[in-house]
Length: 480
Ligand code: GLN
Figure 1 (cartoon, rainbow, N blue to C red):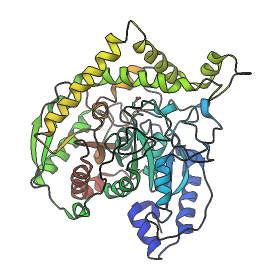
Figure 2 (figure 1 turned 30 degrees about the horizontal axis):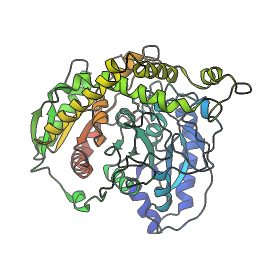
Figure 3 (figure 1 turned 120 degrees about the horizontal axis):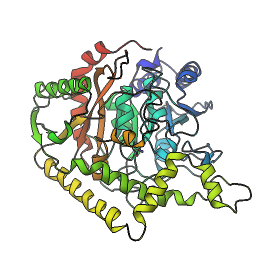
Figure 4 (figure 1 turned 180 degrees about the vertical axis):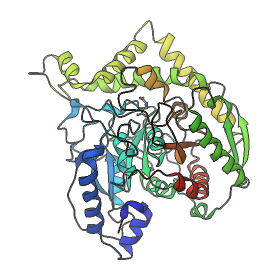
């Protein structure tokens, strides 16, 4: 059986009905990893540890990939940094505990930008993951390995984290579903920290329903995370039977349709919006007036928190040690890559006395205005849609020497992160890159919900997914 063509839900059903076994599923994916990963380089670690378990658990022990940022007891977890090479956490992240209780089997650690900082995967100290649609291109980032592994059918689903777009953007570039819930829904305990007021664990899957299955298992209160939310996380199963979007109001923010979006991307996004209208949704222009400040605010608040979180890696308490450990500066310059060092310096600067008011404080105030924009818009509409990224996947190496250019690719994802809102990227078509590339590459639509509005996001995404399936599949280039 070709499990790569089945959803997580379908594979679980196959196991439960006795049509296949856990072992068969596990061997299938391990074999696929063995043949494909030398080309894609998505994995930092593959765990070939099969154990027959109870098939009646919700996930029936289907293998799932884990971004190399989630602590798993005794399993090397590096955040793709030399700083943490060889580190074996003494405990599980809360999310891993919840998944284990539901019958989850971790098949390995997936590559990423170092400490989740980046948008292409190229900041990894371990390897450069390639986009399965065109292996000369980046898969997006920072969850580069997670997106590439699901897209290449090496795992049916994978875990990721999204701080400013690191699930939605690579999902868009790899043509799969990427989902992050409301900030605080998923516990951050045991997830190696980047920027604590933004970090949000989530998933990569083939279908919207698979994202919801994992969400219901992963989300929930955790006494170990003071920002964790207590609100119920159940999704009404009736949404999966919906066929239209009558009575749904969808906002299209005018500030997101800017110059600089690739024409082919714009065309596919327009097509998806037309489809939403055809499905009965009322499409309404909305305004998020502070959108243009999002990137500036994000690239002040995020490095401030990065510099604080990464201070613990001094070679004494945690992390790579130079020589005997006395020279902390050497330990840190050997352990951290260029981008991490850049952000630590930026963060220390914006927090330093004399500059704090001008940068960090002001950015925090503008962050509130961005949140208010969304609140106001969501008093008029149920859902907001935008492109996930302004372009399709670019060539490996194209933006590595130009950090600003790299940061600009986050323009559509950071604002929802600053506001802590749930978001999903849904594949809606393919487009030729404008750099002369000859392979059509995936385009994602970003579907944003209001705070705690996950169910509506899933409903709209699912109805659109079903309605666009035929179109998306028919345009699919037969790359692999
Ligand atoms: N690309 C963004 C950055 O470089 C987002 C990273 C993330 O979400 N982890 O910060």
